[in-house]
Image (cartoon, rainbow, N blue to C red; front, side):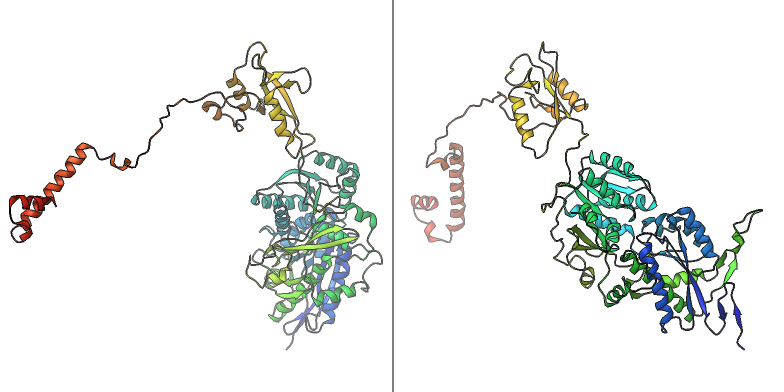
Length: 619
């Protein structure tokens, strides 16, 4: 007998057949750069799944959508209302801040949350087991930025970011990534979400007083262009400046048709990162369909990389549902004893029910492996998509050009990551980027820093001598001192490729020569930044401060006698003294006597008259 029943959400289920329909939810902001791309993509994906007989046969995928309206509070309320529909999965949200809040809701109800836009690296922590990111984490993007900074030889950057979970946590990862490259964030310039133009103006004025001229902009797509508009009005988009933007900027430009000339004028020379998605036939076919999607509004095109991730998120849910149903999984919901309505409450929390198969469905999602519009859909042990990669873009003219790629597998390269995946790591000889046209139409790599406008001039101590004024002396005309030591110091400063403001400060009362040990001690105590004068380099002073190479003679000399040596052909005989000759002669006689004793009985040469035998011994 076949027993057919109806689950709490109205989905038909039985022991021998699949449910006739399954509900999934979506959470994002309709009227936003990411939302205008995600909405049509999700709707198109649901239609494609329902029209494909090879997946979820006999089961219809129903779509419930809610607008978070870029608000954490509204997003939470909409998430609760969405869960009242007993969805088996929720796609979204696009905001990392809202994702943090909603993750607590789905954790309680065991509903997997698949976000195509929340890139905050901390969302993959163990605190959010039901959060699954279907786009790339900013953890990898910030390492790509750090590799760019290292590639061009910069050591300090200024981070401009929106002061929310997305901005703060992304910049925190950037700081860690830069420290591994012996670089750092020298100044952080956060601003509140929805900050006014005047607040951003004040922020950039303060940042422009710093030494670094490398700016990393990590903000929301809907407000990020204001940064560049204010920067241009302040003259901060001219030569010597470097601007690096994260993926928010290409998302804005890709979703705008036709290109706004005024906007492009703000962005000339900017280097930006964009999610890399392989140019497959699936992707090309979807892009060709985009303008004809019936769900798309008749305003700007809206298409960007987030549309691909949103589309793949729906297919990921569909593949996982199909796999779970093939394994006999059920979609039932039960009451949560923790959720009950308090006296007089109108929230109706008791209507929220726990997805009984949520844990099993989550594990099914994590083991999925298929190729989508954005590339390979497969998760690693940290629940991140495998093979994270970015396009490196240089914005100029009326568009942008790709100057290379970055991937977690091979780093920076001009070869596409999918090609390098087939080779061993670090085997490519193309680890470089194509040329960049920087702000101000400069092709040479900017130095990346200047002397800070708010920097304190160096305090240079000068001994106020009363004798030997040729070396250093007080002067009535600027800069207030004169002498040979001052001339050498000024010449050295003028050779530097950057200005070094400095003030000379006389040390001493001018009635007697100051004690030079005291001057050195004051430099060591940081009361002065340096000292210029006829200061002798001695051992006890070198223990306190560093000295330059001597540029004048000290007048000290060492007198030593010099004796001219005469050479002779018989010089080799000098070691042979008279005792040496006597000892040598004695050994000759001793050896001769020993030979005579051993030989004269048997050798006729050692016989005869004594005189003959003596001659033989000597011979």
